[in-house]
Every structure is written in C-alpha cells, then in structure tokens.
Image (cartoon, rainbow over all chains, first blue to last red):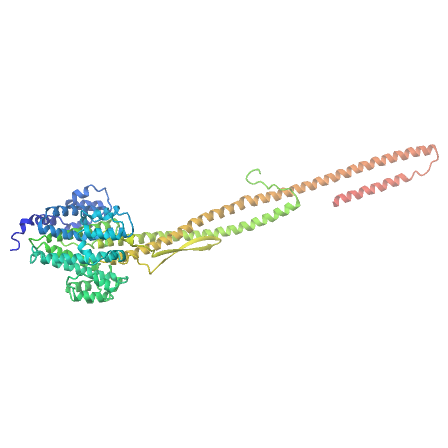
Length: 363
Length: 266
C-alpha cells in the first residue's frame, strides 16, 4: 500500500537515480582501470560514464583534477535531482546535504577563528554543502557574530542551538565542534525518517534507519579509536557519540569507558558485524595501535571494512522501491567510486601498483 | 715584476738575504701544511659526497612512501583536509637544532632534528574518520622531513667544503708556483748581486793598489832623478853618500808586497 501514491511525487526522481545507478563502475570496469599505465588511460576508461566532464581535462591531469571533475558530475546530477524532487523527497534530499553543510560551516569557523580572509574559503567549500546563505557567513568578523549568523541564516541552527554556545566555538577544537554537529545531524536525520508521516513504516524507514545507525556506530567507534593518545577526555568523547545505532546505549557506554583498542573491541563485541570486523583486522587479539592502519594480512583496515559495509548497505537500498533512499545509496556509491578512482589513479601516478587493488567495489 | 715569476723588490743586502731565506723556509712549511689540510678536506668532501648520494636515494624512497600515505589519507577521509591542518598547526612539533663541527679548521654547520613530543596540534583531525591514516601519514612525513634535514646539513657542508677546498688549493698552488719560485729567485738575485759587489770591490782594490804602485814608482823615479841630480851636483862638488837611495827602493817594494797580501785577505 505504501507505494500506491509514491510515484505521484517521487517516481521521477527514483527513476532517474536508478538510471544513474547503471552508470556506476562495475568490477569489470575496475579491473580495466587497474591495468592502466597512465592517467590518460584511466581517463579513457572512464569516458563512457564521465565523458563530457573529463573531456576538457588536459593530457595527463593530476589525480586531484580528475577527482574534481568526477565530483563535478556527481554535484550536477545531484542538483538536477534536488531540482526535480518535491514534497517529502525534497526534504529528504535537503537532509542529505546537511552533512556537507556541516563541513563547510566548520571550515568557515576555522577561518574566522584564525582571522583569515574568508572569501577564498568559499571556493574550498564542498559544492554539495552549498546553501544560499552560506556567503552571508563570510561577513562575520568575530566568532560571536558568526555564531549568530549561523543561527539565523543556516539550516544548521538546530544543531548548534542546544549543544554549542559561541564560547564553545572559541574554546573547543574544531573537530569536536564538527563531530558534535554531526552527532546532532545524525540523530535529527534518524528522527526525521522515523517520524515523518511519509516515511514512517515505509521502506525508507527500514533502509535509512539501518544505514544511519551504522553510520552512527561507525563514528562512535572511529572517534574512540582516534581519540587514544590525544587530550580528548572521556566525558567529552562520550558526548560525541550519536544516541542511535546498534551500540546505543550499552555499547556507547562501554566505548566511553574504553582505554585501549581491546576496550573498544569488547564494547562492540555485542554486535556481530562489528565483532567480525575487529576479528578480521586482528584488533581484538591485542594487535595494538601499530597494526591499526594497514598492518592486517589482507591489507584491509578497519576503515576499509566499514566502507565495504557501507557500500553493501547502499547497494541493498536498490532492492527497495518507492523510496528516496535510493538517492542516498547512489550518492554514497558514487562518492566511493570517486575515492576508488582517485586511489587507482594515485597508485598509477606514483607507480605503486602493489596496493592498487585496495579499493571497494560492490557491483 | 717581469713575468709571472719575478723577484721581490728588495735591496740586495745580507740582511734581506737572511730574511728571504727565512721566508722560503716558512713558505715550504706552510705549503706542506696546507697541502695536508687540503687532503684532509678532500677526504671529508668525498665522504660527504657519498653520503649525499645515499641520502638522496633514501629521500627518493621516503618521499614516495610519504606521498603515497597522503593518497591513503585522501582515500580514507574522502576530502581535502589541507586547510584544516594548516590552520590548526600552531607550534612546530618537528624542530631543527644547528650545531657546528670543526673539520681541520673549517666550521661546518650540521643540523639535528628532534621532535617536541608534547606538541600535537592536529591530533583530533579526522576524529570522525581517517584519523589513523592521518597520524600515520604524519609519521611518514616526519621521517621524510628528517631525511631532508639530514640532506640539508650534508648539502651545506658540501657547499662550504667545496669553497674552502678551492681556497686552500689556490693557496697551495700560489705558494708552490709563485711564492716559492719568487723567493728563490730573489735569493739568487741577492746572491748574484752580492757576488758582483765582491768582484767590484776586488777590482777596485786592485785598481787602487795598481795606482798606488804607479804613484810609488813615479815618486821613486822622482827621488832617483833628484838623487842623480844631487849626485851630479855632488860629482861636480864633493862625491858622498850615493848608496842610500837603492836601499830605500827595496823598502818600498816590500810595502807593495804587503799591500798585495792585504788585498788577498780582504
């Protein structure tokens, strides 16, 4: 029944996204890419899906240029989708943008804190996190003004209001600010898809709740792991954990108490998926911090496994119908694709072919 | 001075001969010392060249690894963290200390790197994701910078040593090819001048003695003539004491002989 009227408003967007999905690079494409000798070859291989956007690149472009163009394509497609979406789908797409907005606002906060010229920073902002009033932020001269402008002008006001004051912006590390915002954002997004009348009880709720919970858990785990050896206190750390996800509340509580990698492994052991990840990278046997980055036997790090999982969840979204969540899945897949291509071309450019297979492909 | 190797403008005296001889001795000692210094420096120079070669190759490898770890970061973070890191780094964690090393009188600066462990300005970067990659990338780059610092100190030593070796070699050559020959020339010149003076003196004395002889002969002749006149006058008057002048003549030849002896001694 839930799909009965979906196509009235959301059908076109969903159809378009399913079309976009077909242009995602497949395993075959990736294996062709890894055979390339030069960036030009990579460019050639990408031509079917990125043709027009790569055409204007000079011969042998830098990997960042290449990634920039691919991102341009993603952005323009996403913009088209937002322009077409109406009603609750449009709202959903707005929510997707908030994550990038947080990054942009954090960037501007960093610039303001250090008294930099903010205009050049606008160019560095992520295009997906662009909103109309973003340029208004650069008029701020001190952090208090900026705080007020953020509250008035940006959609992120709700995330700032309850958990951060303008003194906090001054005193706290920007990473803490960013992660606080992100926590609020995840919770809000989760709240949105579970309570909005259009989505409640729909496939959207099913898939998005799962993926957002996963995202929340991943952040909690990462924050904990990355905070070892820094001056982030345990209570501050605990405040950054989103209060959703499979780990909430017991797992989060244990993460908050964790002192080392084994503590984290213990905290996540209640969830089979994460336990499997930790076992796979050998952290639960006391591998120590040293082996965390890339030590494990098959060359996969915890981060890689999380990405893998995220991609699988995103792929699963396409098994559902009548939901704007496909846009979310498509975007995550596309971002991963850009990262993969960047990685591959970086390996080619630097002549380090032995780890070229370290990308994540789910198709 | 005429030509590349002339002689110094000195008066050819015995005193300056002594000075010149001292100078020659000094130049020879200096030459051998400088030669040894130059050899020591050259040895060091070769060693540094070898180490630069090693350091450069090492740098190539390390920089490659570092660049690759940066690629890993951009893969894990999925965005540009450059700006954030630039802004949050306030204190240098990796520092360089300069020392001086003395190699046969040449002061070579050498840089020593050390890390300020307390400083960890962007420790929280990538808290949400990619933090481990960022930390690892930082460590890799710290190692790369270490290699760069080592290379920098070697290169500086290389340049300074190069300059110093050139100067020392120039000095060695100057002493060997200019100062020593010139001093030798001067000594030769002084010696020849002194010999010349000796010969002149000898000749002069000979002349003097010859003239004296002539004078004496003339005086003798005059006396003889006077005596003869007197004898003739005496012959005209009473004849007496005509034996004395020949005795006197003999005395005067004795004096001449003595003079000659003196000359020889002199």
